Image (cartoon, rainbow, N blue to C red; front, side):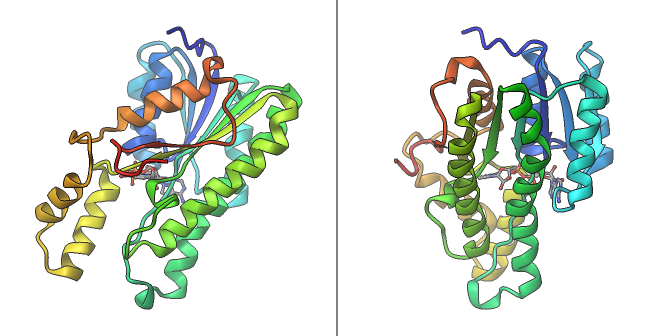
Length: 260
Ligand SMILES: NC(=O)c1ccc[n+]([C@@H]2O[C@H](COP(=O)([O-])OP(=O)(O)OC[C@H]3O[C@@H](n4cnc5c(N)ncnc54)[C@H](O)[C@@H]3O)[C@@H](O)[C@H]2O)c1
């Protein structure tokens, strides 16, 4: 299937590593230029240099998505370098695994500042340019926890529900401009994020890390470990005109662990 992404310009927040990093690689494979907006500027720079060797331009811009000035600067850098923005992928996110009664205010606010306000700020900076161009795609990385929240992830899950809420309203507001807005909800992928959850959950419950992981795997009907490419494939599809009649959706990609 021809996705027609050659020559497109995509911003990927949280694109230095993990799922976001894989999405960046996917865009480059398809011939799109990418601007990575990530707080891990050295890691993002290294990836940008590696991927730029193939001829496609990848730029890294140090960005804390919870800061308005950084989000505005990210959009401005993309316009300065490429003269347009076609696609925004909001993948930057953090997780904290803490029982509700133990969550301190600062931790609650940090999760919301990055996962929710970060999605708002990056979109707020980019969307006016998509409206002016009367075309574009916004893809927000939510989570299975944005539909069904496990114990320990109340703040994370609530933030991912919020990401789906933003997706739905924005999809309605931007439909008249031919702009599609969708969310993708990954299941469990063993990135740095999950290593962190295994650490804290194991300490809290006394269950060894690998046992927690294998119990999680047992809940997946397809019984195959999910990999970042599973998410990238859906993001590339949603970034293309092949999916032009899909908007406001929160697409689950989780091996059947939750069906909706
Ligand atoms: N791994 C999973 O199983 C899983 C499941 C569901 C949803 N997700 C979501 O997928 C996205 C990517 O997660 P991942 O597993 O690749 O995690 P990760 O920790 O490997 O990557 C997250 C990236 O976001 C960046 N980031 C964090 N705070 C930032 C900030 N303030 N500004 C800019 N960048 C920031 C990090 O530097 C990192 O590059 C997240 O939104 C996460 O919630 C992951």
